Image 1 (spheres, helix red, strand yellow):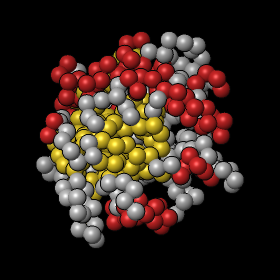
Image 2 (cartoon, helix red, strand yellow):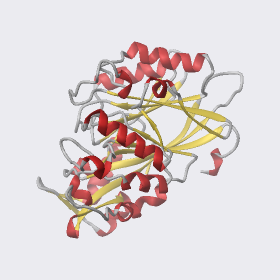
Image 3 (cartoon, one colour):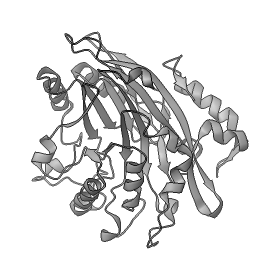
Length: 351
């Protein structure tokens, strides 16, 4: 990773959906001792190793103050946010379909907790002023700007007088989003734009036409890297070349990183790592270098413990994956997943 540590070069890592069902921490009636450290122990070396680290925090973390809750309306323990910070996460995407599960009160309490933890956040906001503040992380001479939008809020209505609460594609047109990205690049407010998009169809193993069309528009407007969430399964990434001749790397869905969802592909996720460089001070073009994916697998073990594993390590001692639907050969699933993820990029580096 040192190859990208010089001036105008940064590395970035991203993980998929963090959606803690009550069962992963002992149930919503549990009062304390939410042991998330142990759940992340086997993959902690994959996090915090790059200049910038981003995660999709799909549940609010308003904590016990308003009562913990699980599917279908999530509110998770604050402790998971502290673990993410300790693991090296810098910024969390919070624009998702569960952002208003516990209403405005839950969202604002969650943001308050995120700020106390010391994490940056994007996609949901406290005010118009908060929404207008660009989320820019400066590293090695590059200004990396994060934007974030969600396909919806599970039909929970965003208050008409408080549209700033969530960046929703139901409230903000794609045309306006593209205008925002062009303004950022045109006015030289940032060098790099990373778009977190909560889009697509749940549990679909391939990206939808809508995902591809939105991504093509974002690429043309200036997005250099698009990180997708929502399907809860891995979807093959690809390069998009836009009308300006530059390329955008699109990870349509990084799958579940940590959740209590059961089902073969719902238990598989990935940590994406890329290098980002600006090759010329005279031109706006950004290059995304050496994308790599480390596959992860959430296992349910004794005493109902859910742990995140490096998939390639886990299959060495676990020859089968057994779900309510069937029993699968672990190594075959691992190799099939690699082949599927390389369907658009044949030489994609995958572990």
